[in-house]
Image (cartoon, rainbow, N blue to C red; front, side, top):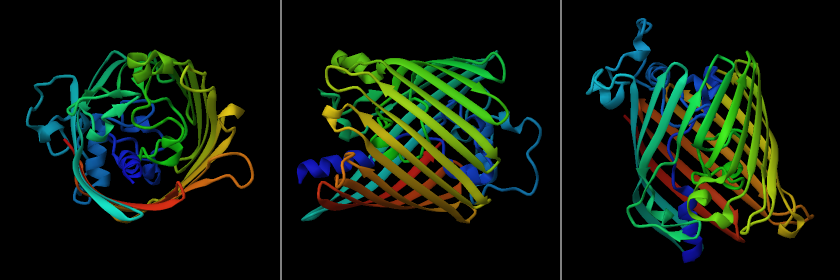
Length: 384
């Protein structure tokens, strides 16, 4: 039971805020509309901050359009620390993120309650003449005490992402550093099966080079890397060449398709593997978005062969700033008929009453390891 509980606790620890596919309903098909990262997530741009104030929060709407240059205004509720520093930072953009949380994990024979600070992260970015320098530093959640075979101190800090990019024009962008590879749909929940089981979890960043090419309706991203960042830094036996590619075609402002591929070379600790998949997202109205992703997880036959992962996420905005979500998820543990399956039903409510702070209520019902478990999460998210 202790082993099962530890696995459950790790799977529900939250990461920093990622691009939210829900907002396809607001006609945002590209993550870069609001985020510095070309793959989405992390620090919001000044425009992204303003947009979350104007379009997402329950109490953020005003009767008039923002004034010219308002997106660069360092003052007001949408600004860093609510504008306390004014324009003293110059071109530097900062964001501070906190996630105090309460969890109840139920398993056969009992349950366990946890109160913890899941995140305390500072992000920063500077843009000038087509260059972007980006970095994060934060407290690592306590249940990551053992990672990649090494024991961490109780109060460990980590920089999940740090990179530099150059964009000579509107079409091309180069990025080098530590980041998560572009693959599939970047669901906000990092424990989603298409992230957790495909090595796209919160500790799965790579050190690599990424090239992006954008046209009016198409986005192509290709990455090459000598391996996972943590393996490169701390465990050479787990380091192995990786490459990934992602292609997105926007069919309309509220419909898009995504094709992805990922290859990982074998290491001393694991066999050669990879994944291929496709996703489709559409928003029939301005208050509903539906995403479906299916992936084949490919390994050598000695390691179990092919398995499948399928995730659907349906989101409905029942009132401005109040989103309800339902996500059935399935993973087969092998290609042979009758192979074991891992199933999840996730229910969530995202409440965004004020600019840059929201409440997340989530309930997961998982069936795996021949046992059914449940997880309840109550989380306050502050982004300042």
